Length: 330
Ligand code: NDP
Picture 1 (cartoon, rainbow, N blue to C red):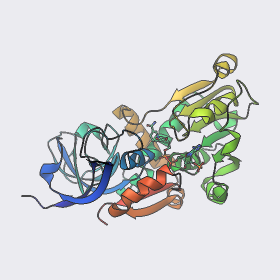
Picture 2 (spheres, rainbow, N blue to C red; picture 1 turned 45 degrees about the vertical axis):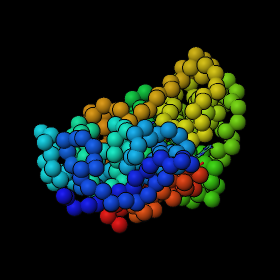
Picture 3 (tube, helix red, strand yellow; picture 1 turned 45 degrees about the horizontal axis):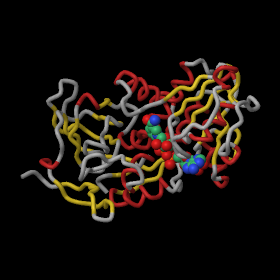
Picture 4 (cartoon, protein in one colour; picture 1 turned 135 degrees about the horizontal axis):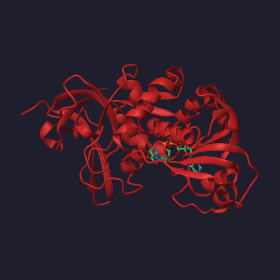
């Protein structure tokens, strides 16, 4: 019998589901060729959906949620990893169909892991988390489609959330003039501290969109979807690009083709979960280079494994600012 360790487990009940702190053993983990001593995890929006049951993210019951983690390899039969390697995992169905990051140990496929760049600690890796890695994928998409700082402003929606906060810090460091759209006017100083030049009220973008509006930005990172994304597209400058990664307002897209066919606007879809390994490795090495760690620290708060169920409720209610690191040993 191996040493028991702690995990958050979500199981079905007569009235819905419950998330609780339990003790489990290695035999309770699922198949995989690498076992990782998890040091940190985090709470992303999708984790909130899984923990609260607000959307059917969990598809195997009972499940340890947590769509990402960072830690050290304990045992490995995968040729790419050896004990002691510092690794990060984002997505691949972990925390949805495979036991995830809210446990002191995880067993996964080595193919899902990325070795951390030397300059990123496991704590910083989870301060970045899937939200921050997705923000990097969005920035890479804007660059790929030719949105450079001289082309004009870049808008970030859901600005005070995780994806938004990291996107602002990245874009500002890369020399873009960033407009932050938020529903939390009280966070204006926080957003300016991360590098936002201008703040707009998200209500400006949350109602039904006209086919075309005044051209206001050359690019955008959208974490919100629905009417907001339709408005963002309608106000994107000729030849601009919008990287769409989120659905905080909704999954619908009630807009018009006018921005595409009259202004040559590009809508770039961003998926972090099944992104190929080469893209992940590129994103993590870009994060090591282009993310100001002091800005990352300013947007990060700390939590324990026991705090995770409550934080799930908080993030879905839009009350979490920036990023939360979960110290799974605490
Ligand atoms: P957060 O909850 O940290 O941020 C979301 C932000 O969106 C909130 O902080 C709030 O920002 C804004 N928001 C919330 N509700 C509404 C609303 N009804 N209307 C308009 N704005 C709203 O979540 P994350 O940053 O972790 O994730 C953001 C989105 O990106 C989520 O939808 C998530 O599922 C998605 N995502 C997608 C990934 C992918 O692979 N495509 C990967 C990671 C995340 P403010 O208070 O500033 O207005």
